Length: 227
Image (cartoon, rainbow, N blue to C red; front, top):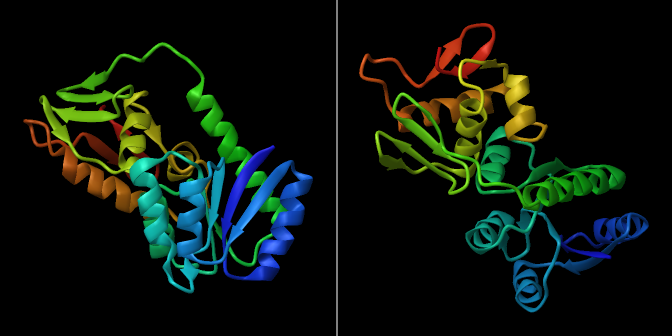
């Protein structure tokens, strides 16, 4: 049975999720504060973390950042914060999904299962892929590194996934909806989030000698790498 840690100060939500998760084959531990969550995470190994953002002793984003610095454990943010900024921050810091309250407990179980399946697929042994390159841009999936003319480029997790998706299919134009599905795994975000990440990535990659950017915009369609 998989073990899940819920970091949530509302007891009613914890009780409801415990019952629903049990029906789905999960064992749930509950921590009502960041301090209690940190203590449990130091003492136990969990298969996933369900994380509220507004907690009595701080912001759950801090715990998300701490976990991502040392762990790949799946993180699902459960919160009443609906703003686009909060979604962007949570996903950029490494959360695997973002669920807004009020939510259906069955939806949480379904999303949790989807995240865990993606992690299992990523762990399946496979031959290390060769780096992808185009006009001085090199994307090394095995090392999770990006270089331009041999110089490393520091990217966030989402920026790397975005350039990797495009580098796998140079010349193809992706719609925003396709990028949300491939990079954000269908998480509920607005098109402006995609535009924002593309804009930052374009600045970080720089331009080709002829002045063109690596990522081109096809108005009314979407974005692509190369011609």
